[in-house]
Each structure stands twice: as C-alpha cells, then as structure tokens.
Image (cartoon, rainbow, N blue to C red; front, side, top):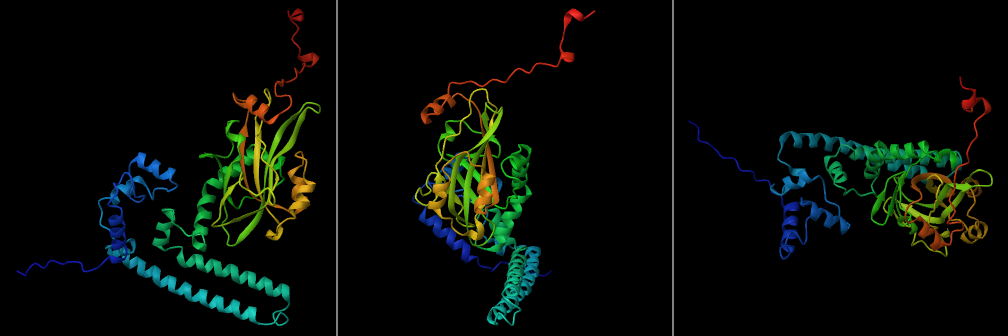
Length: 398
C-alpha cells in the first residue's frame, strides 16, 4: 500500500494578510464596537454608526458575516483551480487589449505630430483625433470589463472614478434602474415639456435635505425645504464641466388669468462638476461669482394643488464660464422662464431632479418668515355651472 502523503499548500498570502494583521494590531487597543470594520460589521446599530461617520459598510451583511470566520486570503489568490484557470484566460485576453491600446496611442501621437496640411485640414485632423480617442477609451473598458477584481471593487463601492472602466460600470448601473425612474417621473408629471421641451439626463443627480435622500417626485415638508438642499451630481465622463443649476416652480397660481405661472427659486452659474468632485451644497456656493438668485423657500397657498419644484443641471457651452456680473445684472426677475435662459446663454440640460411641496402644518409659518404676501388667503375653485340640458330639474320629472 502506497504511503499516504499529506499535501500542504506553500502559497503565501503576505500582501493582503499582513496588511490586515497590521490594521488589526493598530486597532487592538479599541474594542470592535468603538471602531467597527466596514468589511466585517454585521450589527445594524454599528452599521448606522458607520453611516453617520460617512463610511458605508462593504458588501452585503451575509458576506460580512462570512468574512468574520474566513481565512485572510486575497481575492486574486483564492485556491480554486477553475477560478485560477479562468483568470489565466482573462489575463491573456487583457494582454491583447493592452497591445491594441499601445498601438492606438502610437497612432494618435503620429497624427498629432504631422502638420495640419498633411492631415487634410484642421477639422479633419480634429475629427480623426476625436474618433481615435473614443476608440482608445473603448479599448480601455474592454481590457478590464471581465476582470473579477474590478467587478469586486465596483460592487464594494471602492471603484476609482478616474478610470474609464469604473465610470462605464457606474453609468450602466444608473441606466438600468435609477435613470428610468427619473425619466418616468419628469414625463408623467409633465415637467417635460412644461418647463423645458426636452431633457436627456446623462448625469446622475441625487437630492438631499439634511440627511434625508429625496426620491424623484417625493413630497417635502415646508420646514425641511426652507433651507437650501445638497446635490450629488455624478458625471460619467473624464474632465470637468461648468454647469448652471436652476430650481423652478411651474405651478404658481395666477388668479387673474385663471392659470399658472413660473417662478425661479434658485439660480447659480459656473458650478464645476467632475467624475470625482460630485458634491454641490447650494448653501455654500459663492455669492460673488456663482449665485445669481439665492434660495427662496418653496411655498404653496392653501387650496392650491401641489407644486412641482424642478431642478435642472445645464451644461454651459464648451464648459466656458459665463460673465457673472452680466448675468447677475440681467436676471433680477424670478419670473423668468428657464427656456429663455437656455436660449440666451446656450445651455444644454444634462441632468434633472424633482420634488413636490403642498400646504402643510408648517407652511403658514414659513410664509410669514419670508414675508409672503397673501399668506392668509385660501384659494378655492370656481363652481362651474352645468349646461341647461344637463341641469337637474325635479319639477319636470314625471
């Protein structure tokens, strides 16, 4: 009988294991409940504590519970033969893509080096360079799209938005659900075409009042909306853009004409956004170079229908800054139409959001604080008299 040999793995996992051991050594002085690890926390109370600190737990709670009792093996070195063989195939495919990326970069360098006349003119040269740069971005995405490490980092919320692959994955995830909900809200509630004739959102816009995330079309209490909100505008392209942010109420009652008017509740220009700089606090924008019309608390008179407050992110032409003093001098009226501003300053709507307000228990107090005229007036619908042949006349009944 052949002797029984016991195989012992000699693979070392020093790169990640030692880093985690060092981290655990540093935090041994503090109990876990005082300094929870976002990769291992499973208690809802500790999860809320991390979220208050601005740190999101990594992955699902079931996964974090499993990691508490698992070996500290790096993801790339998991001891599964099928997994490792598949990674070899993916790495070989990635090497081919990298060769194509190198070749494309050389082509771009050669085209940039030749004179404009030899390239066929300036416009032809720019067009060719633009097409090559787009192809280069596509090759970068294809090189990493199947990498399990990239997918793991993205699902854990650790993706680097400076890299094309993570911007592509974030854009695809947004378009799968969140963008569809946004487009549904702004079309069903007639924001499009009431405020603007067209809007194709290409940036993910999130709205916050305090710590509360506002879903598109959600009702917001008048006391909560009396302070300027915060925006999280996620751009999925490289580089920086300058945008104009406008908040419009399209349901201001006009008793004289028996209809509704528009009112601009906030307007700011020259606001920079990028894939890595997404936070915009409307209360902290510069009053000397950005804020044209400061935040006005939204109000709705008693008896009026709910008001739609639309937030539009509008890209400035060629991402060039607008003349703030000129815009500030011209746009002094809050009754200006957003369509007019779009045409006047050549703006393009790239993002939108929506919330609603209505008469509530705090509305009268907010109206008095801002000095709203006719705060005590209640609007009532006119009684529409029926046509003669539709009137009920019991005396003629038999």
